[in-house]
Length: 164
Length: 160
Image (cartoon, rainbow over all chains, first blue to last red; front, side, top):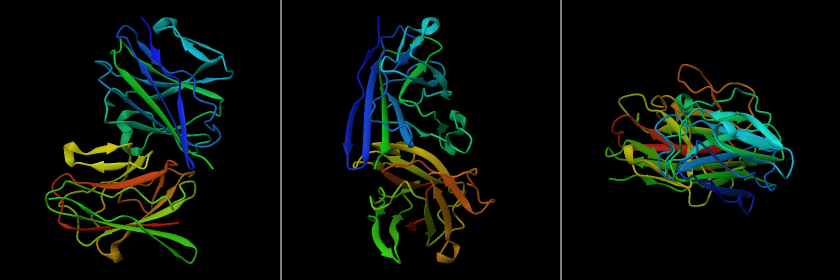
């Protein structure tokens, strides 16, 4: 039993950088996580993260976490109590519950290095705009941290950045 | 019954981008939304949004929302419970009630900045309105009525 993680697929049209990946859970795992992000993402500039899933992930809240890595070996492995990072660490929970983000509904997060206002990380405050002060790091990964086994479905993560 | 949405029309006045569109709604809609903004807008710089209607849009509070998109196919569609987004997502409520924005004299101005150091101001009891917004290639705006909207014309103007 394992995750099926696609690599991040990058495209750039004009100044618009677009990177997406999917993770397919198998129904037995409590954690669903991506591979490390592409080096084409400029971590010194703001970017947007879109998250959606093909079916409801869980019968309870599903928190979303961001992890940061410091080498090209950065990767998450394991599950639940054995979840671990190689050459990186969890940075923070960026949302308390993404369970309602079922396609076509997407949740979007404004990821801003040096954000000067408070983070917005709770679905109860979604009307105030989800935003997170993110560290400038060479690599990121995202993890859905289920309280119970997550549904066997496809989870999609998309990064969008306006680049000069 | 359907919305009549004009495309954003760009002009330059004294070196500033003026991008304008209108949305005409009927009494058949709960939501009145724009098409995606013009690529002439530089999302990395602050801009102002001016909004007004010919008549008050609703008999109850009328929240004003911003959506963000990531492709040229970005668009809102549907209405009320069927409101949906192609290649984008809802980002935030910009203001809790825009009904006072009647006529040019009542126009509301929103300061939109990708890099603000102060908290958002998004309610009618606190002015001027300002918001920390994401740097995104496209935006769209929606009047999210709690009941059927008044048949009138809503005008949106971006200044940068």
